[in-house]
Image (cartoon, rainbow, N blue to C red; front, side, top):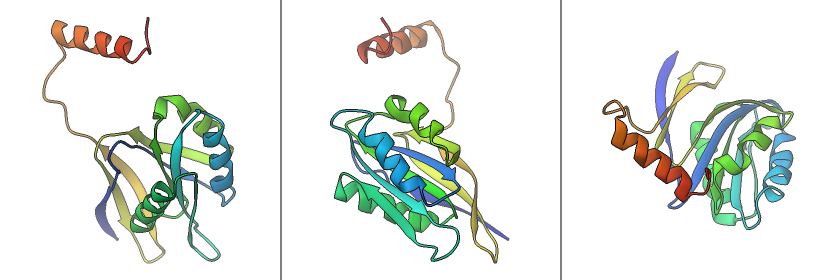
Length: 160
């Protein structure tokens, strides 16, 4: 068995949700969830089929994001993994709905940070061991950090 990492290519101004599912129906179900969640959302979905034709399936309402999601999914190549690239919306707006999709088993990350997927490869195929989401901490939060965090959440209107 071989271990390797694969970087998710996130287009400028986008966020990514990366997860595991169990059925090809996921692609259409996620499309319906996303299109109804946030007015004006733009997205692309890539899904790695794990049996049968073993194709990367895709959907989306933005062709560039759909193509980028499918290319990322193909490079990662882990059966039943999926990737959603979002623009004009944030994971916080849709994540619970995505988690409630009956085919979704796991969400590995939902972020705008650089992401590396940790993969194991065997003769059968590839599997996701986890992700590296962003950078390691550089310190411990102090009072000025608390103030900055609270101000940021209020700036984005997530808190009063």
